[in-house]
Image (cartoon, rainbow, N blue to C red; front, side, top):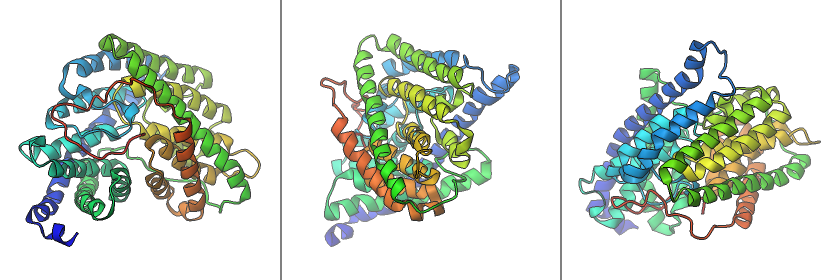
Length: 441
């Protein structure tokens, strides 16, 4: 450990880390900011201009058809295939510089149209691609340096959308699956890069006024300490959430195999099917289809601020329709899997919160942690994410958060059936290096 810290190459890497974090953060800021502006235009300004107070139930059908038509040539013709397939979680090798244009184009065009996926995976691909570009040789250099630099770039990028460097650092540490000094040596440049990036990201938000749509809860229900009833209902609810997430992932794996042939046409078909699921949600509930179509970071804020505004039937419909749409998107479209899963987990737990002795605040905290653990396979990172999102209310909920994340992780691993012959990760491209990443496996 001490000898490694004295190595000139490693010292240079630490000094380079904040220089990596700054441009990565600036690029991520404008990607997310423009994506949010396009999202507002598609789901708010355009329906209002057409004379609708909210998007009508059929709005997702042409939007998702357009997303499929745009995404099909990106997946089949551009280097990197528009990013990794989200059913593989956040894992796989980092995207090399050649893959960045396709990743950015896919995220910037399709996410605002409502592909039921989040921005976190494209951001990580953008971060690793820009970081590897700084090496001027990409993956042709020392493999260890490539791995650390790519991971630092991805960590700096993901920290911008997860509320700061802490969650990103814990996620990196847990996902790296390294031990002792090797883990520390990997984590130090990631911490420095993500801290520098988070500072720039926050400053640009105040300077430009752009909405970045990060995963946050501006308000949560009044906190109460969990009691026996919360654990009695909460732990089975965590197991249920894990089953829902695992079932959606199984659908994603089957969709991935199906799109292995005639990829362009079947990508359009899958995108249209996602739009159909979202339209069914709007028809069943009379609510805006944007609640089911978008990634979830905005919807979960509204859900947490006023959970009683959502009838139980609407929550169940959201879990069913968005869950099926998300499962299809996992194996065919491009984006991140975490944000939609968190919304599904929160909605599932809040739908159960009317059970005797199961409080709203404990249900929300448990739902976030359980869903994140089930989709990422990282129970510690998921618990930290839930604690940070819940804010002051998290102090009393921490035992339930930790227990729920562990239960969901174990159940997800037990019920998950890895499908033989699944197609390889689309991010495994010739210009990609090797990064220990957070995945569903």
